[in-house]
Length: 245
Image (cartoon, rainbow, N blue to C red):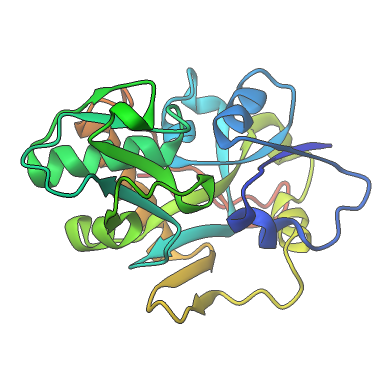
């Protein structure tokens, strides 16, 4: 089976276990959702944006095993500003189609009523929205930690990656077992970091509510056109239990 996983380091603990005979494909997260959409992979770790923007949501099911959800400040991504700004009007994003870019724009609109216009160069931008591993931006020293801002504004975790498959595959393979075995041995359900933030690595009710809330915010801000039901596989094939909202 072909499995697409984002090529960013934060997602690596979910694929450091046993891959068996399966083929792992590392790609930008926006490309992972396209690979799943076009059936070039059967299973993918995608963002809420990728899940919510699928053309036919009934074709997708969530695997309720491992995941990655950010709670509070984690120093993973940031909204950066030039010093001395009055009202920012432009932004630059190294990955304009990335989920983090959309979340940054959503937060600026939700919290500060700012509608920024994209520019093609950081030198021309008042604001930069980026993963922190995407480079240094010394001309934009005023920093808002993106996951902390989400936590404070929306009062829930921010799902960064969830396992999603095409529905027909759920009847053939034990994807809960497969994705669990893919993860690093001994990966905890929740990892408490020195930054004060938490990484949630296992699907639970908290994850379900965070995903539901994130999709509602994406819908409210017109990043997705409909709210999908959350069909979650949490057992093996032919014993699937799904929760819908």
